[in-house]
Image (cartoon, rainbow over all chains, first blue to last red; front, top):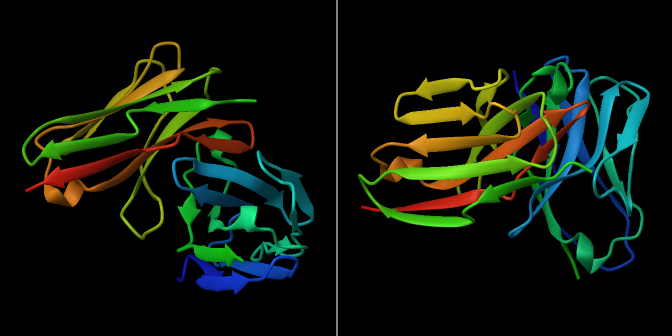
Length: 115
Length: 109
């Protein structure tokens, strides 16, 4: 099994450009989530999904959209990139939500720079 | 919203010394999880604590969950260079896992 796969690994954007970060998991996990990691800020939750067709906002959702059309995929869209979105993005999944005592499996991350 | 505070932010030790990181939540947690992130890597799950006052050990690592389920600690005995990385606590409630800012551990051989 591949686990949680994120693409691309690195991306450079210009301010105002749009792009989609891809995340796929092959573990039949219902719960998927996106975090961003900035120096000294830890991991902050952007959006999460408890199953196909269901998404909700996390701590820092502004500037990001998500959708969950299948169990396997949970893409993160930046509609109009801003320098403040320069960060490392991690996708994570689990069978049940973390509050139900499930550990998260993380992808290897996407390093995004917005110029 | 829920906040999880973690201290210290950085800790540098000599190999063989002990290390402890502390975690406090603003609300009562259903569980606390600990993750380790090696430099340039992604967070990897270490352990989960669920019960009030729970203590778990993994070789040289000891994890504790407070009686009120609002605080936790990770203690490493006799650190090794392989322990280098950032240790995160994360509090679980409802559908979210809220991470602390992490403690970066460096070990001088």
